[in-house]
Amino acid sequence: MKTVFDKPFTQQEPIDEATIARVSGILRSGRLHRYNTIEDEIAEAALLEKDYADWQGSKYCLACSSGGYALHVALRAAGLQPGDKVLANAYTLAPVPGAIHNAGGVPVFVEIDGNWHIDTNDLRAKAEASGARFLMLSHMRGHIADMDAVCAICEEFGISLIEDCAHTMGAKWKGNRSGNFGRVAAFSAQTYKHINSGEGGLLTTDDPELAARAIMMSGSYMLYQSHGAAPAADVFAGVRLETPNFSGRMDNVRAAILRGQMAGLEENVRRWNLRYQALERVVRKSPDIDVPRRAQHEEFVGSSFQFRPRLAGSEPFEDLMQNCASRGVDIKWFGADQPRAFTSRYDSWRYLGDLPTLPNTLEILATTCDIRVPLTFSEKDCEMVATIIVEEVAGLSG
Ligand SMILES: Cc1ncc(COP(=O)(O)O)c(C=O)c1O
Image (cartoon, rainbow, N blue to C red; front, top):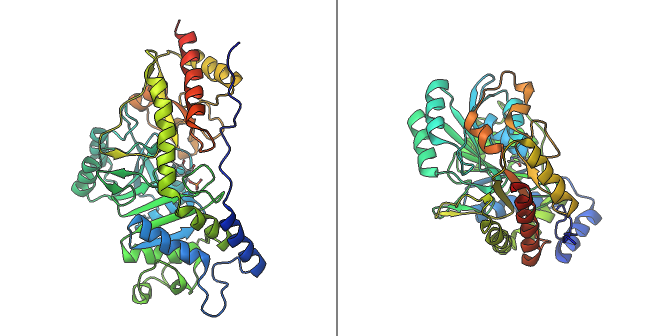
């Protein structure tokens, strides 16, 4: 009898009691909107901005409605004009091209390499050929590219780097937190991310004017001075009447849920990595599966695990997903030509018009599998999941 894993891959840990009490207090007060304060009360959303800016080591922070919203506003606040080109690694998820499109930009997709990083040779070539002034870099599934090379290319071509840190909150590269390499960064607090309020986003930057524009865009009206990590009032003088309001505010309930998780974030990074290591230990033993080594100076957060079974063609991958699913293991495959659940490949975003053929990216994604690593799994659970994957790949490798 084959073992079957019986825990859901979609289950988060509960919200702690102190946070529930804090949220209850806010609910009882009725003051859920971030600008609905009395006397010298500081809204929870503003407190979150201060806490997050301090933790991230950034001067400014904006709490907003989602990571995708933060990405969109980051582009606009960085000066994107309708029709401007935006370089983007082709291995990412649908909210990223969606944010570029929403901001009026035109994505220029860049190849990835076998470690799931942006291919810096292709980035250089496309930066030169396209004349793009923006790069939206997704640290997709937590894989951080050679940031020295990426930043050097941005510098050479005068490109503004916007980091999509939806999967790298808490990760570092050469000791610097992801999100602190570019002009502006966006983080997600959607339910499967490193802090979870169901939905939510954070934007960080050290650029005062960009921060002021982003705050105005988020829907601050003329209440921008009540923000928790905002530039001085005089910075707003030049932007407050020139900047549209795109209404994407964070509310106090979600801010309280996130603040409650900030204190445990470092510890959760450690716990994710223990689970990742348990998976990796087992999967690496398989002669039928490749797990590219991570760069030595990449301190990643192992909240998901990617691997590449040595199988050819789509049929064995479909079988692998089905066989693993029948044993309780939920694998996502980036090679499918049709989008499924949260997973899609760049060539499925047809609303963008003519999409380029990126042979290296397609080849790598054709064998890229992905699983979530929820903190509700123990290390033993992760070993069991990995063993099921290894057995099922072996069964198909014949
Ligand atoms: C790579 C990536 N970027 C951006 C986002 C957008 O985040 P949100 O769902 O908070 O809009 C996601 C969400 O899953 C994502 O996976």
